[in-house]
Image 1 (cartoon, rainbow, N blue to C red):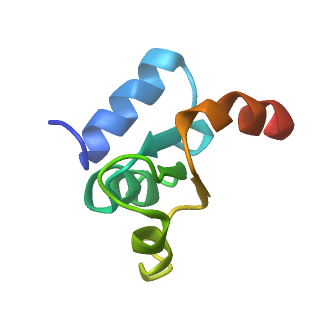
Image 2: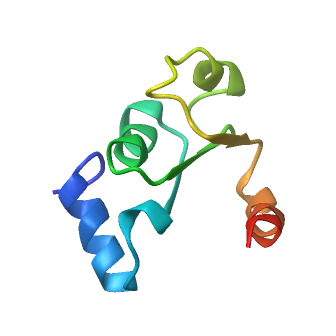
Image 3: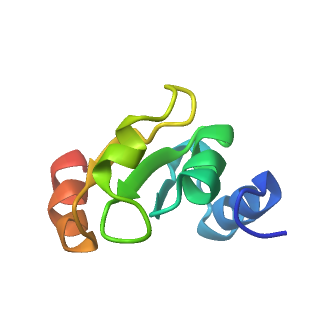
Length: 84
């Protein structure tokens, strides 16, 4: 169990007492975090300051691409405030 695991995503949702669709998965790896979020119907937020640049995320097929791409985790508070 770990990243990419739907079981892990569902476990986190249960712990937080929300549906998986109410979660946001933030990460810098399209094969791990973005895949897990998409498979679990969670919001996929890519951070382009890690192992991949923004163009790596935009080149993904729609079913694997993040819903949102940001240039750093410092943008998360503003992003989440606007969505809430």
